[in-house]
Structure formats: structure tokens, C-alpha cells
Length: 178
Image 1 (cartoon, one colour):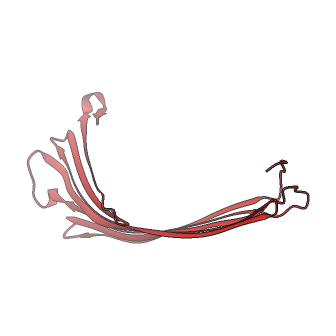
Image 2 (cartoon, one colour):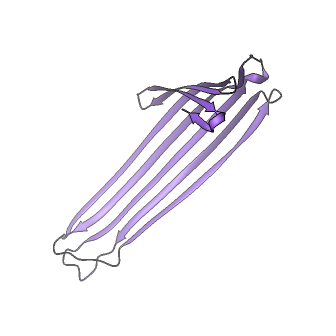
Image 3 (cartoon, helix red, strand yellow):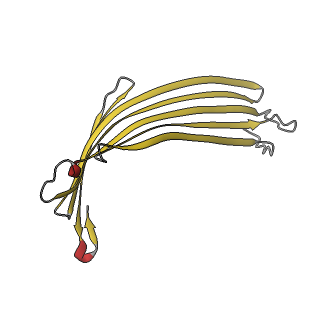
């Protein structure tokens, strides 16, 4: 605002808490590696500017933001080389799994400028569910091939995404072509 007033009493605070728990196991003599975990991230932010008697703009603020993100995953790797050997192929595996993400945010704005208060509260949440599958293999110990497919469910939208990759190993000159 005008005139400019710099308040040295302004405070900004941010705190985050992250927790995750899970485990991995090997089944069928190591042919299937499966893991599951759940984690949560919590963010809290506060901006506080108390009213300063010398401020000609009569500015004050007490705004807060609070959010949670919960992530749960079930991931699997099926080692195909352990099931069937195919000449010329190595490091072959199939990956598949599921992911859930839940987001929640709450915002509270309480400000005053020039004697005019402004307040606003907002809450929002969203969930995402997804499944995926992929294949990878190495051909003649030189060409690594990967392919992945993922399908999401996000608030009425259901995108399917994919990717393909290849890396050729030129050992003779210590180079990888991607």
C-alpha cells in the first residue's frame, strides 16, 4: 500500500512432517518381488503480520495453509528370466501395481488493509487411483528395452499414458545411446 511501510514484526513459518511405512517380500523362490507402503506428507504454513501502531495503512494479516497428501502403493516385479529362459534376452521383467493418492488442503485468509477486513476460507480435496504395467528386457547384452502403460482415475477424467525406451550400450567407447 501507499505510503510504503516496512513492518519488522512480520513472521512466516513453514513446517512439514513426512512419514512412510512399508515392506518388501520375495515370493516363489524370488521370482516375484512385491512391496506395499503407505505414506503421508503434512504441510503447515502461517504468515502473521500483527497490526503496528505506526503503520499508516493499518495492515494486518494472519493467513494459514494446511495440507495432507496420503500415498499408498502396491508394486510388483515378476522376474521373467527365472520362469523361462529365452536365448539372447536377459534382465527380463514385468512390473505391475496400483497407486492411491489423496490430497486435502485448507486455506484461511484473514487480512486487513486500510481498515477494510478481508477474510476467506477454502477447503479442497482430490483423489487419484492408478494401475500400471510394464515390460523390460536386454537384447544380446547391448540393447535395453522398456515399455510402460498407466491408467489413472482423477475426478472424472481417466487418462492413459505410456512410454517406450531403449538404451544401446557401446562398451567399446564407454557410451550409451538413448
